[in-house]
Image (tube, rainbow, N blue to C red; front, side, top):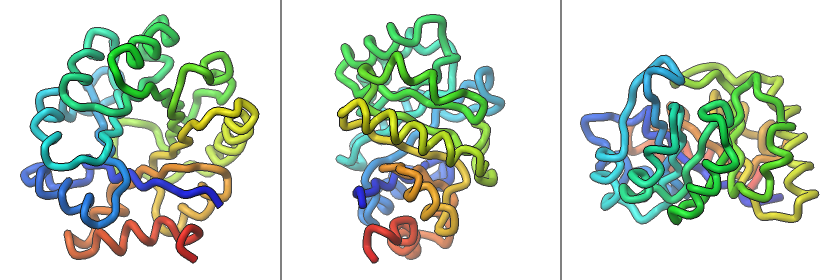
Length: 222
């Protein structure tokens, strides 16, 4: 069984206490911190950008797993690198030259990731697999937290797991959307190595975070 990373999404944290919330999930066992950047154009919501990320960086040494739900992406790559992003994940639909974008992310000193919406086929990854360090499967339509898991994405995860294994590269296969203690075993069985979770981690307040994170890895600690 592969080790599974947990990346709590601060979209579900208390925005008035983001620094405290990040320190709390770090102490509770988070492996990465997931930051959802939304522009109100590529997806129907607005969140935050590089200035907020920069202010949050001193609160943890864990990797910032930054998911850009925005377009265009290229003009902001340098800003996210300067702000402290470790992984920068983009959608292939966010610009005309995704290969160039992934190269620019790596050149800026970050790990490039590629995110697939529920309607984006796994085959999009094939010509880009040597240029990514993370593949993110969206198991909900992006733009809002608290949605229900789309079961059809399990087949996509299985397909991507096979592609990654065939490539021989150490690529993180991540899933985001509706993952909780009930759906986590299915995505782990399908082959993911990282789980993004928002409300499943942040529910119940700070005293519950460690238990919530542990509940997402039942097959690792059994």
